[in-house]
Length: 119
Image (cartoon, rainbow, N blue to C red; front, top):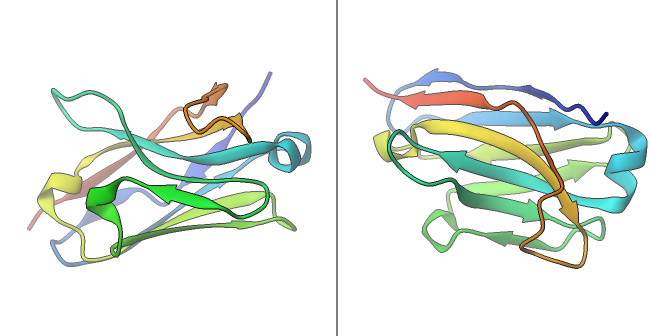
């Protein structure tokens, strides 16, 4: 069974920042790309950002410049730094692991962490 430890969600004012963390087992972290999807109320789940084991990244076009993704191999943790947050960023953010060579692949999901952007 694969489990992730997600943290960092919460309430933030518009324009603020949050950093999400997702810790995985060493085995998963070493062979899978990891990243984040999000799902806002009434909307479909969408890719936020993904990072491969080699450090290649891809983002939703609308988020480039505000969000960054990184991974710490020693801590087997992936981070999503979110800046200049907007109310429309409010969503449940799900950590995932997927095939390193297939950008559409999701093999494992985290339970999600809620991000609320509101004044």
